[in-house]
Image (cartoon, rainbow over all chains, first blue to last red; front, side, top):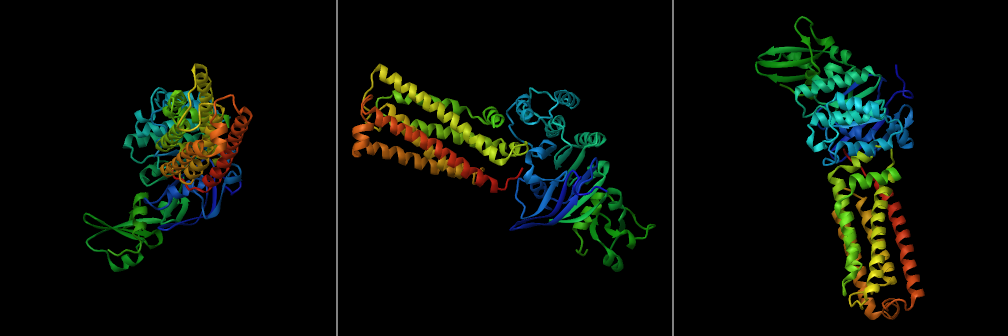
Length: 284
Length: 217
């Protein structure tokens, strides 16, 4: 088990209060060389968490360590080892990639031009293009190329697959798996849970600013079962339900493994777990 | 810092930063409040900040291994480079004007040594008002620029009035060179000191303010 001091990223007691939203006492520790999926609906606090982790916003409480180093005391060393990629990567849209790269590489002592060329070719990127001329998927690949070329060990990805077509998403998932094969740690926020089912080792589930689950993907999925009910939901099932959703011919009910009859229920997908848990407490 | 400065000039520079250097040519106009060319450079600096906002420059910069403080200092020092370049060009235009025949300026100080000091003070005022205001919220540079413009034009107007009403301005600074050269040099040196000290103060205040700001990517 990874401890806080040698974890690529360890967060303890993170709090951020906004008038309309609170991030509440968030704690987690990433495992090195694994892909951790950070899920939750829009507005659950995923981006607030990432912004706090990167010190773009100031948490009201909590501690963030990268490899045991406190973020605010070791900005330079830490940022040299982080690759941050956001779906909203829209900087310098009219500058050629070679100009952006030419500036970026001067900040990283570990920059490797051979690696940069390799990924540029592998991703089919032309340095003479500008970000404005790239598709969303290609923008993310360019950001990943920069991160890979400066020797990042930890990749923090904020909704990287949002807005991409299924094929581009599949390509990116393959890239994340390649990163894991290289021993890199990937922290990947998304609300597109099917992408995580293909690549994540662990899941952090955030709901209304609170961490509801921190487990391996398999254990998280195994903890729940889905019961499909045509017509109404029996009262005893409704009492045990972790969430109920309306479907075309009736309802689907999320049950904890202990409350479910394996013969009458089936495995739950990550999306079903997330959607049903969001409806916990609501009656049908 | 040099890397950040290079980044500022390569990625954040707006063409008006260079175009407004032509404002030095205004010194060749017979009657004109010459420090207005400093305002035009301030306008270019405002455009640079606007362009930086549109290009999500802060998001990019803060994912580099640099501190917020250094990011602020780099932007202000880039502005100072442009301001210093304009001061040098204004100096050259003053020399040119004196060579081809200087005429008294009814709208402020004549084109002479004291004008350099006047321009230094104009830039000091702009930097002290604009940058701390801008770094309070980098997404709203307009308010900071408005306040800086008001302060700059108040100073320009004050100097114009002073050349008619205040003896030191009227009878010493606004006299053709080389008369009262030691007083003019002292005034210009004072302006230069104010420019350097005021900008350093603006840097510190801006860095402190930016350190407190919440950003989002």
